[in-house]
Image (cartoon, rainbow, N blue to C red; front, side, top):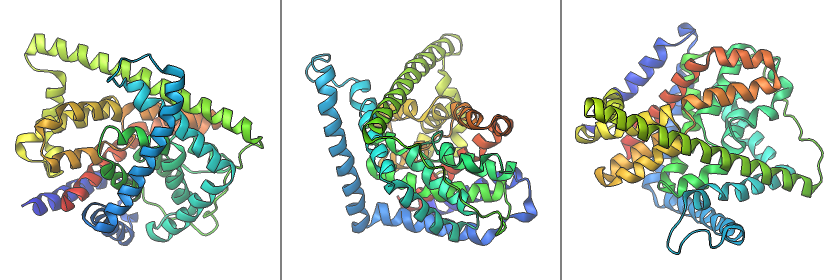
Length: 393
């Protein structure tokens, strides 16, 4: 039965993407089919094989060790701030972003990350039927972040037509930044974080290939990566430390605002209607939870968490999932966890359009115009990834 629901889910997702397509006759079905098969195989490898367990365990162990190193710096600055046995969210989950940001800066400085991103991007371009720029951008988005990635391709930004710009922005919204992966792993199981990152990479291309199909000619298939400004090693270290700290502060501020707002709205709805706002959203998103393979008894609660991610951000939703984990089966926890690992939410529209506008006002306005369509596609990517995982769990 779960396979029939999964197949139904795939048909619905592709149907919704097809309805929004701006060039239905231009859709290339062969690359889409190949990428769906790859998603299934990679999910099976990561979640259901001994080799996959070794990979996940190695990645989780690496991030755990990085978080331990980060804790040394946090303890030095904030030691004694918390009572024994307590673990403030800001200190244990958000501040380690500073240290991981520094590591990304070091790998960037020594040209290790650009080499990896170009290499994987070139390989992806042979599979997805799109250009090298689109493929590089998807990989870079998952490593350096959804706003920073546009700096690396700013040489080409002004030359891009709206359809190619949409694909770049869709990739940025469908992935997550490596600097906050460690934070995710403290909230949900690492195996679901890693699996989501891998299959979202292909999911972004699948949905974009349906909603926004086009062909990149040989003359257009050019990748011009912006070299970083020449800095000394310690100048770079200082910059990435501040960048990481800004991210931690911004996420913390958003959590304070969103969690408080959700609590207030829930309270108002409960006083007036006797039901919380999240429960209402849960009923709205319940059909999507159902086609993702979640049992009927859990679809409303799962739908509420999915909706929370869309209207706030993935951190708030992950906190809700952790609080409600006792209500869900292990399979449901896995499916919802995969859904949550992306930047597909309303605030990302502003973040991405703002990042592009900072580099090119004209292109920033273009991104703002297709912002809702962008979120629509990125949300379908999250649903697609969750459905793919439902075949495996």
